[in-house]
Each structure stands twice: as structure tokens, then as C-alpha cells.
Amino acid sequence: MWSSIIVLLTAAVLTAGAAFWVLRAYRRAGGGTRSPRDAMLASGAVALAALGGYLAIGKPELPDAPYEARLEALRQRDLSTYSVEEALVYYTEAAKADPNNPVAHLYVGEILLRLGQPREAARSFDLALRREPRLAEAMMGLGIALSAIEGRTTPDALALFQQAGGLTNDPRPWLYQAMAAMEEGRDAREFWREALVRMPPDDPRREMAQRFARGEGL
Image (cartoon, rainbow, N blue to C red; front, top):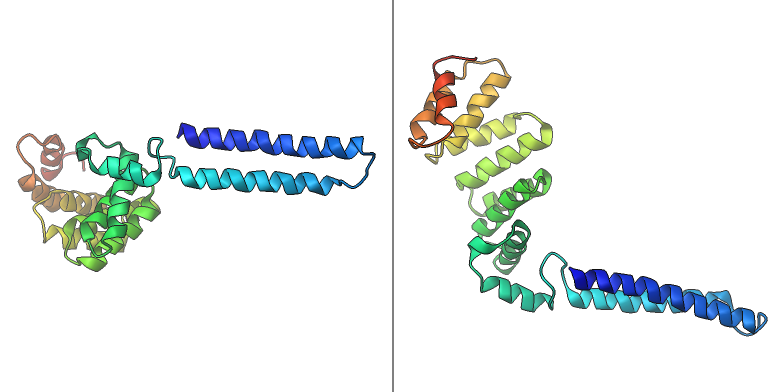
């Protein structure tokens, strides 16, 4: 990242210097053969050179080094050591390398959702489902992304939660169906009970699910 900043700062300084040098020469020559347009041309040349340097550096979200070298170094590390941004780069590149791999698109969507980008996440979840229509995790992700975009559980999102509920033992599809029912003023106890039976004993959501399953607080 610092290399990128240095390049941009250097470009700004050199561009300003180029313009100053040509304008000074123009004034000293008494308005002779040089014109202010030369400053703009010189500045443009410097800016183009700086842009070339920036592109050679690569993507700023990874540590300084040529991009391919940084990406290869990333591949050599344990996935558990990645920052969120590094994980996004890794799985984005994995999706490009193997476009038909639904899991790579799924992970890109999950990371984008975590970063608060539901529209971009929805596109990635959709790409995953186009490759594996019965991928419950992608159904859940798309449903959550659609709900985040609209600020409510949409009919499309609810249909995705219902479909995912029949494909996985994850309690989340039932939790989201319960919340959708509560939003609409419907009885949500059945959904809370379905979520509850799928939760492990140490799940921190159990107490809430038990209370709502009994109809308390509804």
C-alpha cells in the first residue's frame, strides 16, 4: 500500500514541477517559442508515467511487491492467517481461475456480505447457484443479501430460506423464516422450534429460540 501512495505523491510532485519548469522557461523567453500548452503536455507525460508505475505495483490491498508475487506468497500461507481483504483477493482469483467452481463464488459472496456490500454479494451468490442450484449456503447467502438490500425479508428471500431449510440442518433458514413471520405478524413458534432442534447444546441462540418457541415475547 505504501508503494502505491509513494507513486501517487511522486506523480503529483513531478507533475507540478514539470508545469512550473515550462512556465518559468516561457516567461524567461518573453513568450517566445514555448507556450503554456507545453506545461500541460509535460504534465500529462509525467502522469502517464506515474500511472504505468502504479499499474506495475499492482493491487494496493496486498502488501508491497509485484502483484503476481504477492498473490503467490498469499497462496503459500495458511488460510486462517488471511485478513478479510486478503481472503477476498484469494477467492476472487480462485473464481477467475476456475469460473465453474461454485464454492469460490460462494466464499466471495460471504466475504462481500461481511464487508457490508450486499449487492455485490448477491451477484456472487447468484453465480454460485447457477453452477450448483442446490447449494444451500448460497441460497442462504442470497436470501440474506436480498433482505439487506431491501431492509426486510422479501418474498424471494423467504422462498430461498424455505428451500435451504429442506437441504441442510443449519438452523439459520428456520431462524430467518421465524423472523419473517414475526415481521408479518404471523405465528412464528413453529419456525423457532425447527431452529431449536437443529442448534447444538452450546449455541448461544438457544435461550432466545426457546423463549420464542414457547410464545414468550411474541
